[in-house]
Image 1 (cartoon, rainbow, N blue to C red):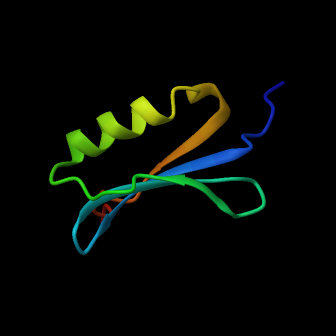
Image 2: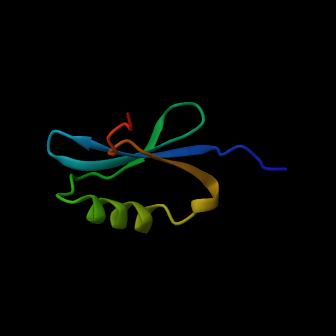
Length: 68
């Protein structure tokens, strides 16, 4: 039996580059990148350093183009 994730970490593209934020189950942002990254790889590295508990959140990548 899998327990539902309490947090969601979302990677997205902002006007100034790649950013991420972490939301609690109540919808409130509890942490964020604090800066824009120029590459997706750098954003993912910063995200993983700040959110090491990968078993406790769901990851959403909003940087991908939708598939037709």
